[in-house]
Image 1 (tube, rainbow, N blue to C red):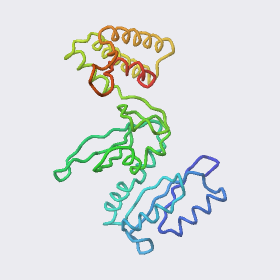
Image 2 (image 1 turned 90 degrees about the vertical axis):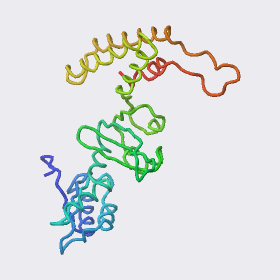
Image 3 (image 1 turned 90 degrees about the horizontal axis):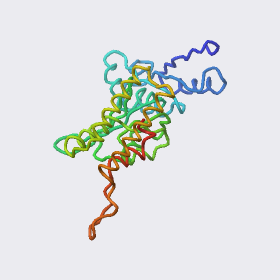
Length: 262
């Protein structure tokens, strides 16, 4: 199997079978990253309970991918338990090349909670919590181990994670639309059109532009930022007696983070 690149599914019924898998790994019979299917609810396996699932999942080797399976009537409950515990969804997102992170407020029994989300084109993980922030995202258990490209709305807590950062242009388009429609800033209308054109051209090109076209778009992007500085310059200082940070032009953010936007 190793010679032809086949990664076996390791179906385990109890912790003893996990130990066998570890033995096979130590002696080079199977690869470093292993895929486990935890089978429960059989007379010859562990019972189909959340406690038993958690016990075996915790015993798995580091960097393992796993799923939970129940026999007969236990199938759906164990699938749900595996999803809640993370299971393969969390494992796949941890090693993904690209994923988007976001959070939004939700109502749970009449109280404000936060729904954190990590997603890509194949996998989605939701994590509801009473709070939002770094501690919650750490408890979710994906971003601390994620090393791919994380797309987000440049909320500060996302930047603490050691991965490549890309900023979500859907958020920028909404901000630019507001700057044009409510503040009548011409540069914002032109920038929105440019970002939409770049997106269309990237899709047509199969995901990446050639160097010449990319350079052309970057030059246009920077020219529009210069126009933005004229239409809405950054305030030199706060008014006397007022506290807080100096108000910054939207164009400043587009300039500072341009490598994460384009």
